[in-house]
Image 1 (tube, rainbow, N blue to C red):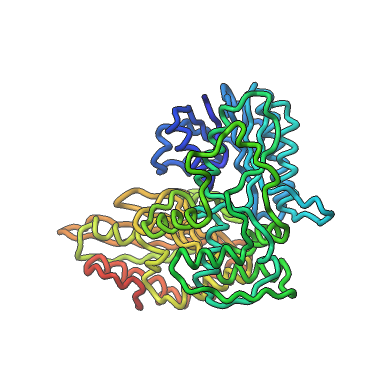
Image 2 (cartoon, rainbow, N blue to C red; image 1 turned 30 degrees about the vertical axis):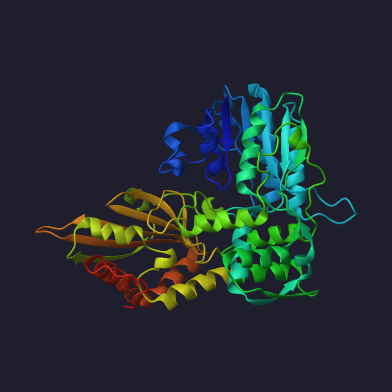
Length: 494
């Protein structure tokens, strides 16, 4: 079949598309920027169409000739995520109906509480999107999953960091609520299987793994699988969802704006009420993946640097989407730059390996405290901070997150350009180049670019300029030094 996958640059869509290809389907990916999929290994076998679900006039070419359309978009983290998802779902449903699509598949969240409790905005929005798609006139399947356990998922990262970093913790009362987690491999199996469902199937299904646990039990079970000592967990009443999300944001890489809707969803029990999906997509011969096995599989992926996609793959809602402007467009405006160059007594290939390895566990090669403080300040003002890390310790792809940057461009062996996603009064980029030098060796060229926004932007650049010699100068010296004398000690001081 010809399958349209929205959200192919995200966590679920980026794993579903290659699975559909492996099963023999034709895959078309809808992306606002086709370049975001340029370096993804499977993208060469797919048809990538630029379109925007919030611009209905762009959608007909994406839906033309499609048999099955997957809605895997969400605007989690935006202040107006309910309105944004409602608009996207409405446009998606209309385009699918107009194009004669035979099946819509949507991955949503657990059903809102039926006991009179007030649903979280996140659950309310997921349910609303399901209703909009089901009412489209196109046979629709809504898969309702709670916590997804897989390497790189936001829920798994929350669980992993909380458990590994805190041997003892005071927790909110929701850690005692029951949850039915599901392994990412089972989610993908259901999503792919829905492509072949008969047209009379037009409904929602609860999907979950074989274990029903509290979040506290999940932390203890995680500790056991990871070889950690049993955790001391003390639930207390005063920790509200708002305080809980700040607590999660402080300890884990997941920022507050994403942690809060996830936490609010955990306030309600999330247990499957039926397993009707098995009538059309039977359980695998060995049964669905248990929690312990799902954790073990995810940890193996993390430790072997084989994480396919991460929760941070999607650009933040407040991140500038524009690429680095070309010089002519800057005429008449103010642009601040900081340029550093160094001759390196090593071939360009050795220099490039250091450049492509920046960030994450490798650090930024200068004044670690300064980078850490900048990351903490960004978290305090609602930004993503430094702890998003990187998906792979050695290789980067266009479009993926790298600490509080986004990879905007890569020319292998030559150029790495990063676009800032930290909170700033303007837009910023960091470029790193490896060039052959006359007479042998290589030249390292580093350029920071800042386009200020208003007076605050000018004041910001002036306030940080005195630190550039230490931060940017030290970074250039240590990258050059590390290329000349490779060492595992990446966090070097200037």
